[in-house]
Each structure stands twice: as C-alpha cells, then as structure tokens.
Amino acid sequence: MPDPEPTPIVVEVRPLGARGAEALVVTLAGAALGGGLGWVIHPIVGVIAGAVAGVNGAVSGWRGTYCWRRPVGWLAFVLDSTWAALPMVGALVAHAVAAMQHGGGHAPELGHRQNRHVYRRGACLKRGYAFTIGNVISAAGDVDKPRRRRLITDHEDVHVWQSRWFGSLYPLCYGLWSVGGVVGGVITWLRRGRREPLAKVIESCSYYSNPFEWWAYSRDDHWPPGGKVADLGWKKAAARPLATLRRRRA
Image (cartoon, rainbow, N blue to C red; front, top):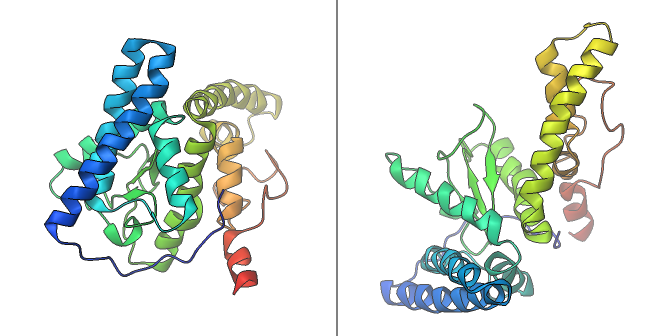
C-alpha cells in the first residue's frame, strides 16, 4: 500500500467547466486503457472492460477523485482502469445502490483527490460494518466521528488498495476464504465441544481470520478485534498501524 497521508478535510471547489473537462478526459483515457487491455484477451472483453473503465472515469473525473499531483493517483487510475476491472464492476454497482437511495450520503471530504469514493450509506452487508468493493466504500456511517473516520482512512482504504494490487483475483480469493472459513468454522466448533456460539466461531474463521481482513485490521491498529474468538486465527498483527507510521514521519 502507498505511504499513508493525513486525510485532508478541505474539498476543492471547481467550476463546472473544469469538472466536465476532467470527467471527459478521464473517461476517454480510462476507456482506452481498459478497452485496450481487454481487447488483447477478446474483443468482447475489450468492449466490456472499456465501458467499465469509462464509467469509472466519468464519475471519478467529475468528482475529482484521483490525486493527479502525486504518482499514487496515477497508479490508482491505471490499476482501476485495467488490472482491477472485475472489482470495478462491483464498484459501479455500489455507486448505483447509493444513487437509488434518498441521498446516498456521498462524503467528498473523504474522497476528493484521495483516490476513493465514500458513501455514508449505500450498499451494506452487515449493519454497523462498512463495505468496500473496488474504489467505493459504502455504509461508512457517521464519518464526522474521529473513530469512524479512521475506520475509512486506515481500514477500508486498505481494502481499496488490496483490490488494486490483487485485481480480479481479490474477490475470488476473498470469497473462497470466506466459504472455506464457514466449513472450517463448523468443524472447529464441533471439535471444541461446542463451547462458543456457532455463529461467532464461523465469523472468526471466515471473516476475522481472512488474510485481507487481518491485514486491514492490523493497519487500523485494531488487532485482535473484539468480535473474534480470542484463541482462533492469527495471533500477531500482520503489519504496523498506519497511525504509527504517520507519527514517525511527522
């Protein structure tokens, strides 16, 4: 994951003409990148990949999502438009879910020039938990609260970059671990004499022990998390907390 930076709270106010121009350029560039790479695989794949990357470019360009002044912003755009095509399909669905809600709660202070989209509401798999797919973070909740804001910047943003680094393998690997964790959780529950609630054991195996979640919780300085069965899964944090790295750079 790129070097962490403190989250700015000031959102740039841009004229409509500038927003439209950026949206157009990013749409065309994204479609060219996605379509070109997809075309190597198959013409139909090229059309689909180009369309997905183009729509992402339109939304991201209009909102001023990518940080063009830093290399990490260009890297995020290229990965979103190419390697991370499958997660970006999910991201577009997340945009649509938020758009269909009455005020999806778009939070530009956490997304503008920060290479991600954040919604206070939107798609949600479990109440109280944020949900990230591609470069979209949904169900962020009350991001005016410092702890909830840090959840977005130090945990969910890790998932955004996991999606970029692992690309289309990310949802596949995440899903396979989750399914295997359910089976492993049931077996573990039976072998341990059914001491803990079955649902909690399954959640510990399929969710909290998932390497992607272990990584994100560790970066958020929240390992081990409170909902996990204490003696199941990884014992030590996967990486140093981002807050610690920021303090050392200050």
